[in-house]
Amino acid sequence: MTKTVGIVLFPGVEELDFVGPYEVFGGLTFQDHDWRVITISEAGDSVKAANGLSINVDHSFDDAPRLDVLLLPGGLSTRKEVDNLRMIEFVQRAGKEASYVTSVCTGAFILHRAGFLFGKRATTHWGAVQGLRELGDVEVVSERFVHDGSVITSAGVSAGIDMALYLVSLLKDAQTAKNVQKMMEYYPQPPSFEEAPV
Picture 1 (cartoon, rainbow, N blue to C red):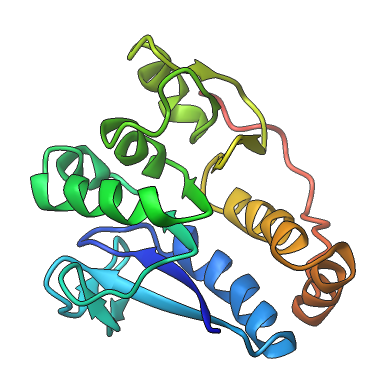
Picture 2: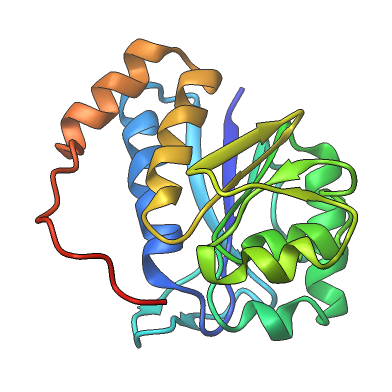
């Protein structure tokens, strides 16, 4: 039986928030043909991301299949999406059926609005940690990713890759996650700079 990872896209979504995890889950599908990765937008139309990348989308909210994993990326436009009733209703419906509900960056605010972070530990982009904390009903921590029950949230942008690799280890096993990591050559050794001022 086919199992599905669904990544929800919306205008202004941050590219690496979803492309990073998409690459990881694509590596899972390469090793386990029972899995597939799909993209979903409100109307099923193509979506223009924050830096101008245009993405053709597989499904709309209305025709999306049942999801085993739901992923909400972030970006500045999540500020609008938290008030998009169609978005929130879809996340509630799809997330209720999913084994894991996940977010990258400020996608956590959509999960919060949909009711998935109440009483949970969670994280988000460093620049949005205080805003999520001020909502009052979630324990916000500054970690690369946080797993609490069926909910996994990750910090900003590149942290979604780490979260997705961790999730692959849960969906399949640690060896599969290591294989995906090796295929991606994901062993970060970034150049060293002084930390940028906040």
